[in-house]
Amino acid sequence: MERKFVRKDEQIKLIMECRQSGLSDYQWCRQQDINPGTFYNWSANFAKAAILFRIHRANLLELLLFRK
Image (cartoon, rainbow, N blue to C red; front, side):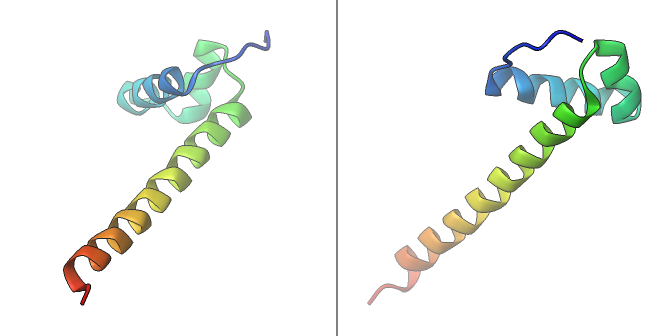
């Protein structure tokens, strides 16, 4: 496998393709010549970012709705 930089928007696209393929992450990664460990890191990073976004949004709403 060749090492190459993959932009964040491309990572999201690849994650979505994998999820829609019906294959396991491992099988899909092998077919696409992507290291499964790298793919799992991408997925974990986006999951963490989504959680942080939800927390931030909830805190912002709380500030807006309940400020005195």
